[in-house]
Figure 1 (tube, protein in one colour):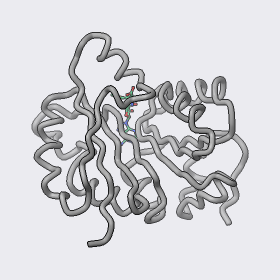
Figure 2 (figure 1 turned 90 degrees about the horizontal axis):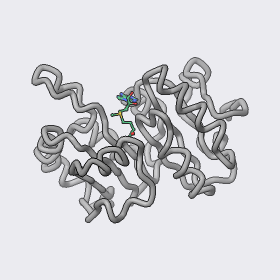
Figure 3 (figure 1 turned 180 degrees about the horizontal axis):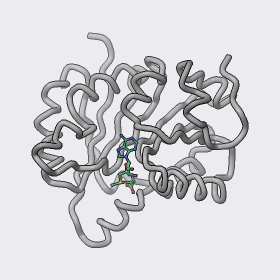
Figure 4 (figure 1 turned 45 degrees about the vertical axis):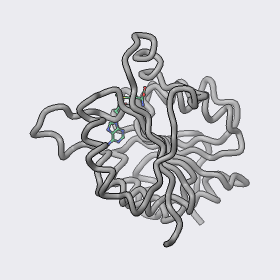
Length: 204
Ligand SMILES: C[S@@+](CC[C@H](N)C(=O)[O-])C[C@H]1O[C@@H](n2cnc3c(N)ncnc32)[C@H](O)[C@@H]1O
């Protein structure tokens, strides 16, 4: 069984040698979700407080944002249902999240990488959609959003490649119970946001 130290922060060097044991990480919680790029953890903290029976793994790669988010979580989280890791989410999810273990993977406003030569760095691409699919439980969901029109166009062109893996469900601003910091800011400015909710298809 994985040895988990108390507290929210999971230092990568202490966890990198085994896949996550979510039963040990979140004792008694069977619903498991993950948020990529939590930044100041405005969404993560409020969402976790509204869903106290859900264990949530937050992943943030930028040190300054990670510290800011951790500070917010440490001050405002009302129960012990969040763990936070400072690392690049793609390899972390691929290597450490066991197959069929997540109920929801949240990715809100991933870096848009607008320059043509950087497009391969975009997280929401067909290869990662396949990798995320493997990590979701049957019927698990991938929830994401972007306000960058070029990224939305890119996603719309990638989704047909994974149509065998996911069903796209209707989802929009009216369905959002909790907003991220960036989402609130852009919504207040009237900037359109593209929301996506994909459900993992069962076996054919
Ligand atoms: C535009 S910000 C959005 C922040 C937050 N999700 C929100 O909506 O307010 C993108 C965030 O994703 C983080 N990020 C980008 N690529 C990442 C990766 N590969 N792994 C983990 N975090 C990442 C960035 O550091 C940043 O905090």
